[in-house]
Image (cartoon, rainbow over all chains, first blue to last red; front, side, top):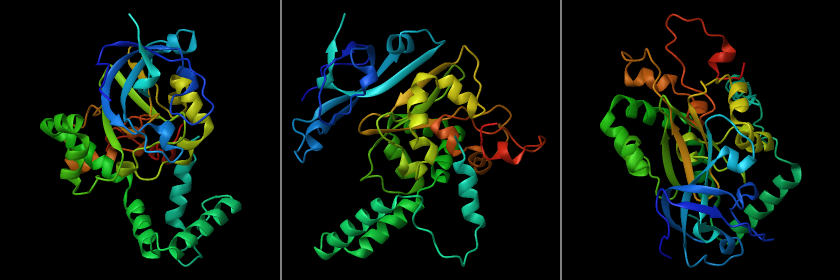
Length: 93
Length: 232
């Protein structure tokens, strides 16, 4: 799978609910962030967890979130980053 | 939170002839499950007992001293630092002479006078074992994993790390296939130290980002607690 995003792109983490294994923390779902870097592609952990091959491999990105965007309150000079797979990200303006 | 330090010190002081306690606080049913699984896999020739022994020895050979040597080398050699940040695995393999082929991807994040990184894993306990060894117990605790993203400055303060407001704190949640290691900021007053001496002030906690490397110890009296990087 080809990377859709590049460093500096604005994204939003999909606010999906799934009952099975995934590597997208709840506290970041629906939150807006900025791509820091692409890490390359990795087997999709949602399939890997159930003995599948995890294909197509998914691009993984380090995404930076402003503290206030995540927790709804201000905190001086604080940013949270997490690694999010492409199929959990959508482009925003 | 960081009582682990005291624990690992005790390990060195214990009677060398005492029976080895291999439980490490593991629940009895988990230990039983591990043993049953291990014996089955050996019986089915998936691997041999010697393979497990080799893997245990490899795991135990990885300690924060490796990371500290890499950090000291990056401080001493700006060209190496650039390489380390661009191609961490290749730079570490070349300098330490170890094989990182089978270890997860690694990213080195550099602290500057205006940017401080702290690593956590809110989903489990992802940790750069290849260069820091086995994670401390507090790193895996629900408290550290949740509070670091919610109130990072308070967590850092509990480790004795108070940073000015104009320093950005960047909490790095290792949620997937990449492991992160912090390249700490070289403390002032270390200009004359040799690379070996520099490696001596790079603590495990400073490479996780909950602490900063110690200042030179020559003139200052440092309490044992502080020396071990315990929160004060």
